[in-house]
Image (cartoon, rainbow, N blue to C red; front, side, top):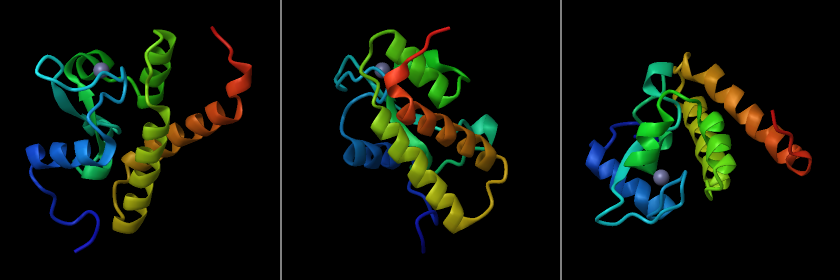
Length: 136
Ligand SMILES: [Zn+2]
């Protein structure tokens, strides 16, 4: 029992993510279709200790998922915005906030915690300083 108990399999989790967030790529905003395939994106990468939980997953198109590589979600968000893509910053904030809550409930995830906290701080600064956009 609990938010992070037994997790559905990966395909079922992707369906749940699409139900939760809608059928668009979090990064480029394209709607999923026969030509734009949804993939599971781990907000905190697994190599950084991110868990394979629904709370750590969003849907991204194959192109964005592959191009992001090992960049942090905020680095990649900013790159997408620089490219003029309608990256879904509120969705990212919501997901990271919910993941932090899930980790607080479940415990553990010692490697993911500082990474996640750093990302949330950066998003907070973005929200606070959105008027004064700096480049370089
Ligand atoms: Zn995309």
